[in-house]
Length: 217
Image (tube, rainbow, N blue to C red; front, side, top):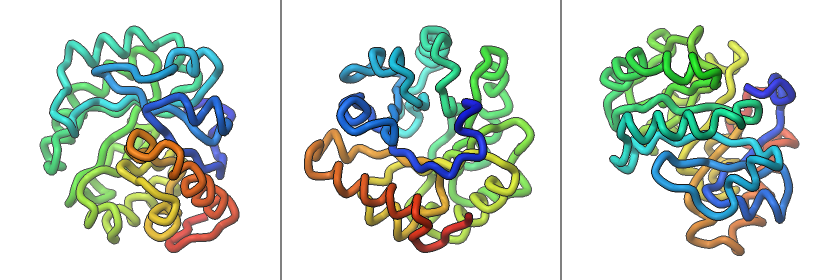
């Protein structure tokens, strides 16, 4: 976790495109992907943009080779990396933990902060908190919007972990369901690049001001 983000209450939205970072400021970061780079990502990373590395598991495109390639290629930008998502197994928290234990050492040895991706059924007592810097809330909408994710977020925030929620595509959803998170990502800008900027900015501002259901801090 970058030192100037530790303990921060700032909220951030990560996009696959660097456009929002360049046009609207540092409240927008980048969600890099192991398969391909979009837009001006490397230029944004050179400019100090905060970022995470998606593992491609949700789309079924993860391979060990492509993951290792991107970890090596992006290592010079580790200072602004919020987290590297250790590859998970969709809809299976047990298999996700088994894969996590096998692979977490690779980004750790390369000096990256790491994230565990949650799946339905995961509970706080099963999370290896001492090994992670970030909890990435994945799983189904029921998991993310319900008590499972909320309790995991409480446990993570109490331990000083960064909390990120995937597949959040509007400011209204951020405020209504996920005001307890530090950052978010989604595909909204690839679908509606102009219409959704104000929505996301409003959501970030509201959460910064302490507005929203389930606010932890």
